[in-house]
Length: 201
Image 1 (tube, rainbow, N blue to C red):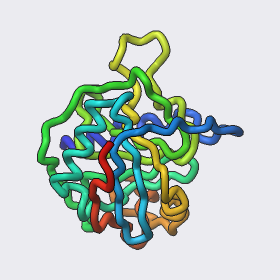
Image 2: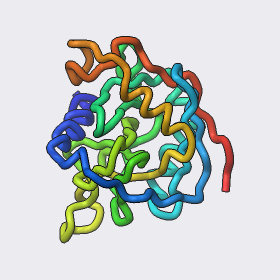
Image 3: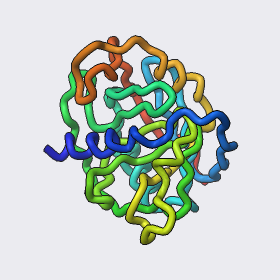
Image 4: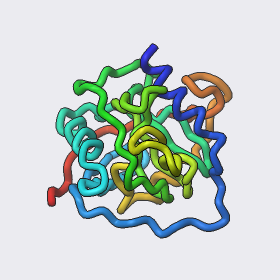
């Protein structure tokens, strides 16, 4: 049940503007670099240790525990997001080895190439599902005027190499059914074969 709550939360955000005419230049974080080796190529994510210390550390620790090895992409919405993390290529749920973390969205900017953690209705339930922003998705940022760290989704890093790979994944043929988001599952599985810390600060 927890898995479906988690992915349903991000599904509800799809009503946010997803196809802006212009995109903001993404800020370049200066934290550790994580490499995701996938069946379609490598993606490097620079973690934002300054802007999202809790979330970036959580992701780094999951990488160190090899949690993302075998994770499969199960949601592709061109112009919006590519989502993965807690399901394998057979769509089996993979329980993260760490507890959920509190939301931190004070410095959030869902620019193209941003990497963020999904959560369920409880904003403090971010766990093992993350996504790549394919465009500027400011509707996923914290709501202006809301209490701090209660709305939006936590951006914890930025794609700093391999955005062409993310775009290629977003362009694959999709199955007509299957997966938690029917019509959004890759027809041929796209899998993280290995995730590792490439550099530390």
